[in-house]
Image 1 (cartoon, rainbow, N blue to C red):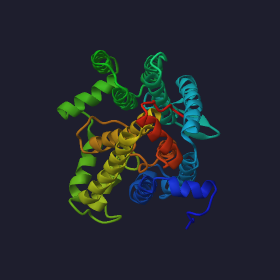
Image 2: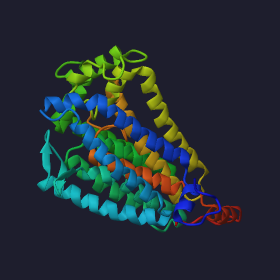
Image 3: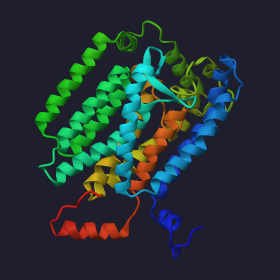
Image 4: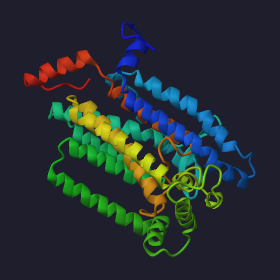
Length: 384
């Protein structure tokens, strides 16, 4: 245990970190590692690999991901912003490279190989994009003559165009919703709301019209006709699990779900551990989002408020999409369950998001005292 009397980076970090957030992130990572034992062996066996191939790889990514999360949590808000700018520039450049030189998987170019490791740049773009947009919104709120909102719109246009070019409609929708929520918090005029809502509706209609795989997934969701094998088996796994599950290792339907260790790990959890266990997972994600929004509501610094709200919304909405697909409440979409699903890029990227949240929610007594003084005197609080 670190004493309060100690002084130093580690001691300061220990006593200023939001330990509820930290415990929640570590708990979700632990749940994901546990579920990898249930979900990944059937997939590995179908591919002719060692039964615990994906379990070992999952474990291999856990420690670096945890180190990334804790390391980033030491940063100050100003350092978080600078790190996000660098990460955004690098990830956007890699997204462009992926369009020309990336690996094509199921008709999409989202992956690029670095030193033999496949990386999905868009996963790292998301948290960096949120933080940079939060800074732009905050600067505009502090000094209206700074075109922060306009720059954020232009940045969103670049990100959206790259995601559509891959194509990756799910990430496009996720990024749009999170960005729209942050813009609304920043005081988006009603005229902009109407315009952007119209653009979003037009973009969705265009995607349905132009992209056959998007139209196919929506049609299968609405009519139930066509190749619905994966969602049907996922639903069957949830039904067979009942309230308390069939027991660890006793799942049967999970063995025929193609993406049981990634997109449909929630269904595997339901079959082996039951609906009650899945409800606990939902409550954990809900707690994470509500705690983040509560912190954002109490935050006086505009940058911190917008960034924390955007980052927890990103995790919350991504989890909603994944769970919604598993429950057949949404059309099928390849999107991982944050911190739980198998995946090197997604695991490290979500830990970057978690690290940003931890860094921005650290309790800084001296800074809070100055902010309260400025707020009471009617002076705005500048972004760090």
